Length: 598
Ligand code: GDP
Ligand code: MG
Image (cartoon, rainbow, N blue to C red):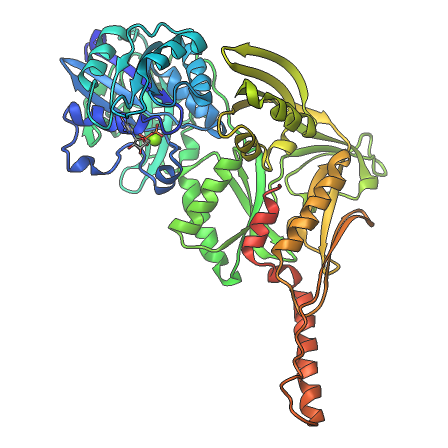
């Protein structure tokens, strides 16, 4: 393809402002699919994505419009996938900024548009949903200018739903977004934008060619992983698969190369020609590491093998999540899994439950702690270990120092919610670094321990701000902290799945919260159940679930003493069993609810 005829763009928007609907329209208008084929939203192709209204895996579609090739790149819309978003944006020269004509600029609009500006994108504002009676396009136009500082005089007024402004958007893409630049004669240099497992094709790799070209039969080298593969297919999605002889500079498309696992095809890697390699890789490759860990256990122990198979299958398609076997006294056999963040955790958990029909118990999410142990006999320095599981916490006497991961978070929020947001950050041991105002919005920067964020920070942020706050974060390394392991005892037995590592200053309130929640969540039994939070041997919080009064002997008329005794014995046995399997008697919803810190 003639490079001057190529336009690469993504669509950025606050959730629900119409990104997917617009993408579908663009595909339909350019003839990619018939109206009947469009009945399903094409770009959000997983159930969970559709339900949550977020895009997890980037998908790209090649459109043709008036002699030009338009590559529409969909981007994941959540901070857990920040690196994938950044790679997708780096593969484009421009973006459509979709803003709801009735809602106006919202937090996510800002976060997204700033990222797009950082990538030097030409941004085309699209004021969508002008068909709504409550639409105020002129007000929104002014808002885009005041709040974001973008010229919106030539914003396109559109309705993705009613099909208004679609041709204008396509024309604007051709006219305003610059064509990519690249040298067709230089050695191949292509960025690996995304990869996923397809049951028919194997691992499919989405690439953006920078220089040179990639073709079938070529030996390509992955510069970061160092492996070499033979390209056996080259093509594009329109959105149906179409094979092409090659992809030249500026083009976006896919290749397959008989790769078995996505772990071999890491986002951000550089592909080059194995025989005539580029001198250096593209900048910015980042090996993404799981930052949140939790245990996943089958409710029914008999499902363990099924869980193993299902997790292995998911892993084929998602190199960013990790797993290894784990055993728990309360929950039996399961897996310790690592995720990019809480949403990532929820997505994997939901897919296992839904697609693989598994009933699961998830333990409290934990971050990765680094610790140095005290010197053992004969050791020059104390051993350094990484802790992924609170249950593996060494004896406190053996710990010289513990470090926890910290993040720098940037929060955008309308003024009126600033107070409670600052309080939330303070309560979570945050250190305020910066506070500025953009229009009627505050932008606050905080350093926070990740430990305080993995529980429910995002949910709290959203509820405090009625959905208006958005945040973005990056990791800034480990720092020492006064961290302790808190155990939860139900009926005097520690429930290993509920133990967690907390900062000493927040232990008591965390412990009290957990006990209170468990008190409401665990159904009453025939005997009373103490619930305690403890650090070491010291109880720091306590609640009791009152016994359910039920006179089992009431039905025994008269004096059949032996029958009465038998019944009482049976009840005692029940109690014993109850104690033995104490934690398993906790309903699964109670577990999940208890682990979602309030
Ligand atoms: P996304 O989260 O940005 O991908 O938003 P969607 O495309 O999923 O749209 C969110 C909701 O807004 C859906 O119910 C759409 O049908 C609706 N919607 C999208 N575009 C328009 C529009 O132009 N007019 C109206 N009235 N509704 C729209
Ligand atoms: Mg969508």
